[in-house]
Image 1 (spheres, rainbow, N blue to C red):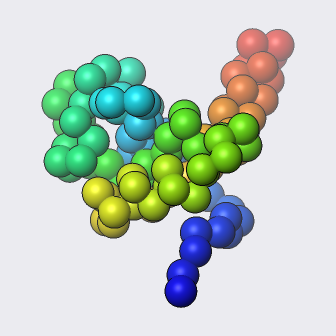
Image 2 (tube, rainbow, N blue to C red; image 1 turned 120 degrees about the vertical axis):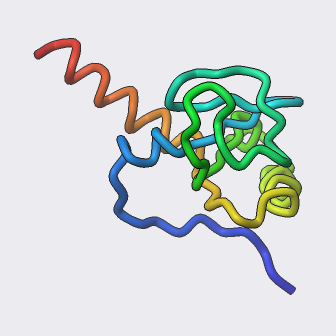
Length: 104
């Protein structure tokens, strides 16, 4: 029996952002160019900027989601080719980076 568990790994967040697909309730959007309404189950590239997706995350798989593992499993079943990223970790890191840039 297998379960989904977070594994921490160092990565370049700017590179991650360029190739990240953010899943919402029904569709997804490109983290790089902010294109909305992408059908995440099939999209290999962004229809607007053309970037190849390598990572995926979900706004709905947060700490408050009691079925977080089920959400991750559903997305990974549809897109096993993409590496799942924790959305809250991503938002925290990018938020800190934006604050540093703002106060420079």
